[in-house]
Image 1 (cartoon, rainbow, N blue to C red):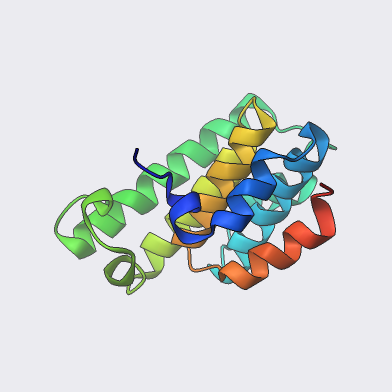
Image 2 (cartoon, rainbow, N blue to C red):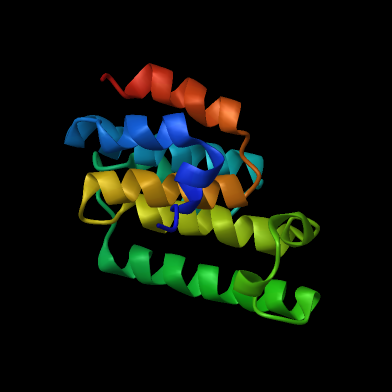
Length: 148
């Protein structure tokens, strides 16, 4: 059985996400997205507003499309640096380039919007880890948000 990336890196955190209440998982996903944006130094106003707003201010379709476009553009710039698609590179190599890190942080924001809160929390966490967030910081967020 293949482990999902969060289970492989942070099994206790993955278990907490899996057992979380749906509302707590959603709040956690957006907190993770905000942390990823901070770590990656995302400056895109739309990405920051969506990450900060969470579900209190659900983004318009245009905002989501702009996030997808931003992620695509950052992934393209990342690929140009790497000489290959980012999915084929290890994290240490990706983290050498700001565009690669920022792309993963924007992906965390997009992931937080997923319809299923548990999937949103897991995928946002996966992207945040790829963006350079420390496992300890994510676990500290879980301590604040995920009540099991």
